[in-house]
Length: 365
Image (cartoon, rainbow, N blue to C red; front, side, top):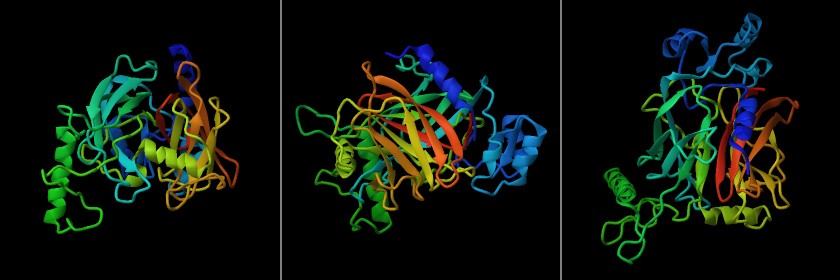
């Protein structure tokens, strides 16, 4: 078992200093915008609010290049100072990863997310519980400036009613009925990937019924609130896997399915918060005999011979060892393959039977 103090100490040690917002969280056009939203000590770099550098020299160096994808590596911005009195809104979105293109990138409604402090490794006392809406969006309102933690993701699943065939819950079913009506109004009900309804007007297999539960790492710690109507593109949304897709992916990379293993799905980001090619990752701890690093290609298929991310910025590890207690913490290092520059080191919680989702922006360690 991992003691809570051990995990907390490691996460604090690795959290370091990093971009405060990803590219899908455009917040500013000037330093004044950030000051108005978050107070002194926050500046605008590449339409992203970041903590000001520690010294004036570092600030000047960072200001010299706000358009280069890797301009910030010389002086990555500092992480926000924790302030529990400054409550923030944090918004995220979940979509489907599937080998069936009719399901791929579809929003996941009705998933439960429990927001947890990094010091609560079992999430015994969630900070907040929220659910994804019809488009897969979830909004947390109990986070605070500099919050460090994660969210436990329990995907929606059909339930049996009176011993009959499993059905989706009313909320999920209604989401897809509404989508079917919208597609019909737009003249798209005949499209190959349109939502199909049965004779009782119930959606027919709108989602996989065997999603793998997940852990969403809150990286980087928030500094300002997300807009309540923030639009998150599919490329930047965590992708939920079905167990069937996970087995297929393991088959593609030539590894067996291990129901006790944990898995990592990562997204590498540049200084502008955009998915980036040419980044390699490695992990310390949790490697087992069947562990396998992968990078997706332009078709989002895993490739074990690629050696670095393609333009989608997607990477990860399959079949990680969660340890005898079923819970482990690993460190993940991201490096620019072309130059050998370290982008950052990140802490990730690995749990038996779960997929951990981790964004990896430039990070000062």
